[in-house]
Length: 595
Image (cartoon, one colour):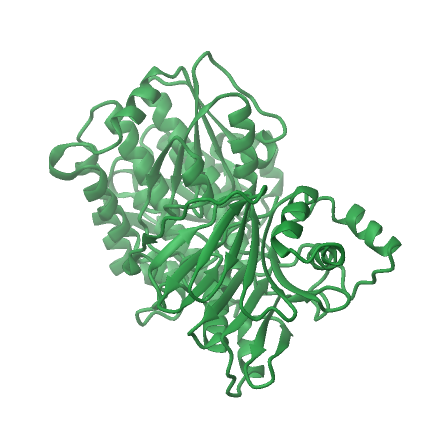
């Protein structure tokens, strides 16, 4: 949440900052702003707006000569979206200007101490407290690095801050803990950004800043220190531009583009982890899992739903497996077995709740696998093992292709553990279904969306793997259409939820699991008897006349690969027909980097 950019050196600061913020606005779009050094006046100019970055671009429609600047697009935590709360923020006497991503847990205590010294504040953010804290410490010691070292020891919580000191036109200072920030180097310049997306256009040599570090960034050099100011080594790596593209390729929205990339993502995973009839997972990883007696899945949101399916896969091959919501496990960890093994799922690799869980896991000496889409992310660097999804950039806030990639990766992993190579046959069947849905089923899905776009409530029903898919389908609909939705196991209807069913209540039912199909048909009759308007998604061999969407048969354990796109298209079309912002739903951001 929140996006940071910065630059120094032989680069047009205004152009990079605005481009970078526009690229990162999926991380937050409550407000935006930049601070840049005007080369003609050698004065720092600050421009801020409420709302998305587009408004900031319109406000800065004049030529600007600058080679130093920082910028920010905000997802509000402390304080409502407003100009005083928008970043960049400044210290009381404007000695310090900074942008900040993260949450300072003890900010009120620090703020009270500054108020007692006579400091005042324009807004309500914890970020402004950091700026004035730096200004206050610089009164006693002009060594900026020393001051930042002392302040890092005072701050509790998470932060990535890019800092400009008034009068120092040759440096950007950075402090970082538990919030993502990357540095890229070019010829005569350095760039900063919260992820690699804005950097690749300018330079593809990228370095992910480690936690608890201080950086000194100049046009021709970049130095890194720990909190005690001991120098640290730096190793830049090349990033593949093809996996970090923001090109819409003719699509009207990122969400539908990313839905229609699911098949290619699945095929890429097949090639990455099972080329030429052999699995390519780390042998140490496979041995560690085989030796463990309990698998602990930890995740949030969409990744949690993928984890539910992964746990089913592990139980199917004889492993004990349980699934926990990260924000709960972090405070109430459950660690079962003599040799437990943790599997965390995070699309960004920067999820704050999972970073908290990682620290707890380390306290208990637990080994860990991370399944993520971002190589080099904070969690990926800290994990014992990682599986990289290589799904490419997912810009739409509502995850689609990354979810299908997570399920695919877990299916490949469990098949590797059980040495079953029929997974490739099964995934090829899935790809055929995905292609069929893309080419043939969208008109039916769009018609269903048109019919249900004004619904107050929509329910999803399923059993087994179909219930797991129902959970994700319901979440997608909530996220981008703002329609109240619930996923209900078919057998649980009669234990309370059926009281919600009334004449005309829309219920979408998945019947793709031959183990539960007969029982699901009984559940359909139960809700029809109460007047529900039922829409059935089924496979050919389980279909009945009147089913809404029928797809070719596939192996039931891969439902969330084969037909998740039906759920995603439905949410997309409902949101579109309601005139909502499909890619940027209210109150949400892509990478959840605060707890």
